[in-house]
Image (cartoon, rainbow, N blue to C red; front, side, top):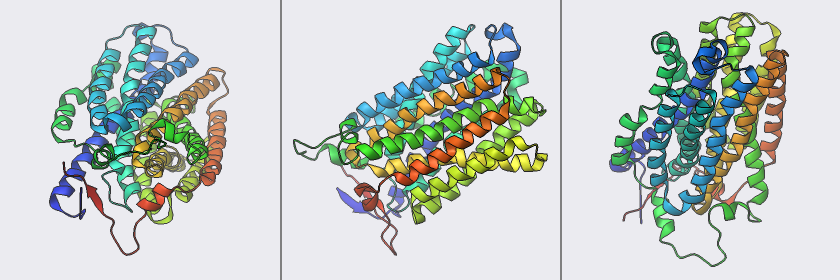
Amino acid sequence: MTTTSPTAPGDRRTVAWVVALCAAALVFDGYDLVVYGTVVPVLLGDPSQLGTITPAAAGRLGSYALVGVLVGALAAGAVADRIGRRRVVLVNIVWFSVGMGVTATTHSVATFGIGRFLTGIGVGALVATVGALVAEFAPAGQRNRYNALVYSGVPAGGVLAALVALVLDDVTGWRGLFWVGALPLVVLFPLALLKLPESPKWLAERGRPRAAAERVGFAALASRRYGPATLLLGTMSFAGLLLTYGLNTWLPEIMGQNGYGKDWALTFLLVLNGGAIVGGLLASTAADRLGARSVVATTFLMATAALLLLPLGLPAGAVVLAVAVAGIGTIGTQVLVYGLVSNYYPTSARGAGVAWCAGFGRLGGILGPVIGGALVGAGLGGGTAFRIFAAVAVAGAVVTLLVPRSRAEEESAPVPGGQGDLVVART
């Protein structure tokens, strides 16, 4: 194994391919998340599409993909620390692409739900794996920023879904929107097959003799050293994903009930996810300098303030600004959570650690759309949903501040006055 400067041209190209391919894969995670929110009004209003769907049923349908994400994330965590990151990423680019195509061909509520579940398995495995892969290529002291670049693919996918819906919905219908989500099979998988390398740190770890008592993967997460922190990190992700999925699924419908037309509702999705991209990248730079915990707690509190303002009947400009801040504090916060988790565990447990947070967090993602659907179906209005989401954001901030610092974080911190090294394994 050799240590080289992160500025070496060959190493820069390798890192650039890793970041670009992983971010592109997560763009379609975000696309899948938001495209469902864009078609909910159509499915609710036109029984000829899939049959009669109530708001509560729509909330459950939104959660089926998240159950799949939970399954996929935990499955990836069980194998990625043992068989490598690259294989898991390649298999699941194909998997979720096929799942999106299957969803586009369905004609009943039951088969639509099955398609959403299958898609979620592939998405969950990708979300759980790319964080570990990128963390093991990123220079020390810049890992929050690199993770933010990659996980910003999720809100970027949300922006893409809203734009595609605005442009193509009247042309292709909702089925065409799901076919767009199947494109990675032909445009992303071939590039990943050629250009995505295996993690050098994982390759080095695989060849290292282990002590009999040394734990790998999920077993390490349950150890005395990491057990309490694992529960807290999972709870942070639970809160972040409850907010992310709850808002992305129900924001168009809630704002529509408040008098905003379809185009306005989709514009709010653009603002929500656009705010998350810009704010998440800025916050990640602060996290590398100030520490991820304090920044994550701050963005959770930003979400609290924005969500409490949204039901107050503000002028349109102020509502747009509040939605952007809500995007930073919800989706943007979850981007930062993945960065924190990716740097928290050692290489032998990093894949399992990210998978745990992606998987357990999806329980919050499942609950978010269900809460929104139940409240809308009961006629309680969006204000109640926003206040409940604000309370979740406060809880997320408190839990974040309780997470203890880990040895892996200390080892990955930047050296004062230095730029950090990139370790590259030569095999």
